[in-house]
Length: 130
Length: 92
Image: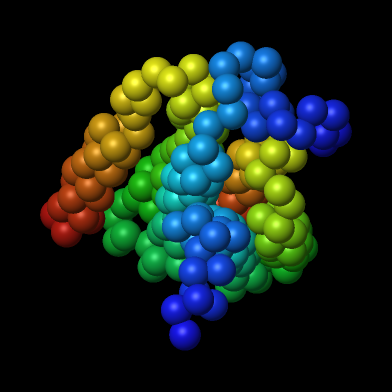
């Protein structure tokens, strides 16, 4: 948390001497993007906890709530870590004046939510057929 | 009327600083949402541990953006919260 070189320490990845300090507005925007993904991560954790703890059990499918909730919680942690990595990459690209790297997050989130949705449909169907 | 607004824009172009500060507050409140669900389940200790992250995140948002390690700390806190949530979810 030391701040020895206040003009050049925006990049927390240790690349502080690389490139030039970007416009503060861009740094703020990058930070807000990271925070938005952080809230998405926390929302996934809340959703997973809610499924496991607050839903009534699926009749005939005792593992139903865990198979939906646990992956959501784990994915929440993954989203937080990936969001940090993307913040570092974007900050570095801005310092070096390069185009911003493409984000893997939207595709990742879409894929996981689709898979969880399919699993939820299967759990509901299995529960209804028993 | 307008000069006052212009002054504010000069100090904070595009209100980037203020919008970022609001984003930090929303993030702090998101931690409170996780804590609320854990408390609702009746796990008071785990709930209070997660709730203690709220003022920390709130204050992190007030530090200058140049402070190193701030965002890494947020990431670590979310991972820790996920682990606590996982433990709570797997506790019968």
